[in-house]
Length: 188
Image 1 (cartoon, one colour):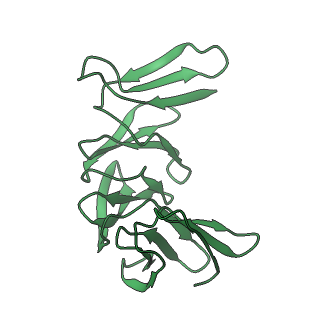
Image 2 (cartoon, helix red, strand yellow):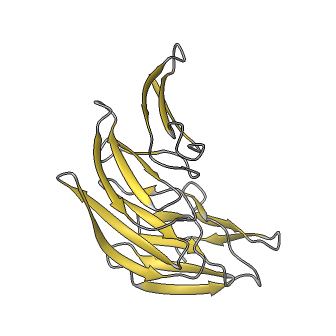
């Protein structure tokens, strides 16, 4: 019965993370973590809430106890951290996508893949593949285990957004900054 709300810290004078009771609206917990623009996501594998502030510091909070479990400097991101079950994927403004794992209260970098201006990511778990849009008009296909790029598809003359996968129809959908919506049969 909790809602985790992230926001701006008003130059550090206010808490940027608040936990509210979803039944009463009462504040249960607060933390000052710096400005958080990309929201809070739940990682079911670790039962933690993940968030990354605008300075690029990622945090993991235990959803049962409310305690901070770990933090890591990943770099400024273009999207929310994408949970992977005991880890996450970060799309960095500096031009890469990173996979991080969690173990014993520590976040460890597994791999980095160069992607210019990466969007948020989506994962095809059946084929163990990550898809990410890029600012060069491509959709990138990356091996989830290694970070190796296994495909690149030019679909626009402008940036490509965050893809989504419709598992029922076996299709990948993605939009572009030129206003196009593309749909591909899976797997690519």
